[in-house]
Amino acid sequence: MRLGDKDPSICTCHSCRAPLEQGDHSRCKNFLELVACPEHRDDQLHRRQEAEKEFERRAAEFGFDEKWARLKALPVGPEKDAFAEEIVKWLFGDDGNRGQQAGA
Image 1 (cartoon, rainbow, N blue to C red):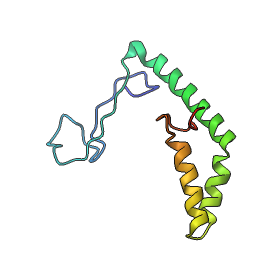
Image 2 (image 1 turned 45 degrees about the vertical axis):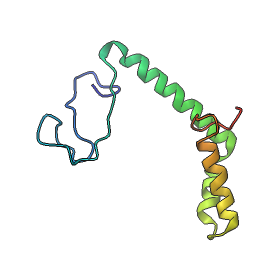
Image 3 (image 1 turned 120 degrees about the horizontal axis):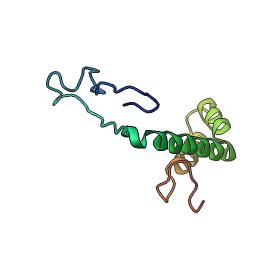
Image 4 (image 1 turned 60 degrees about the vertical axis):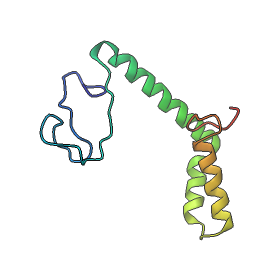
């Protein structure tokens, strides 16, 4: 079942979109999608929603939207590189937590 769905879904290949039970997908660039069982689906949905809220809060605190807009508007050069580096460091902080500054 997909997150939030009530009925079972057919597992599909993310590359070719064909059902996984049909055909040979050995050449597809398969990405694995883990879907919670019905017993844990509500908890998974709740945790995902909470994580999204926390990311949005941290993004606002960081000024992500403004920095991203500024980055896109800058010409290629050292200032653009510095903005890009700051955003990347924030997204993939030293502690490995997406959207968290190191030590946060």
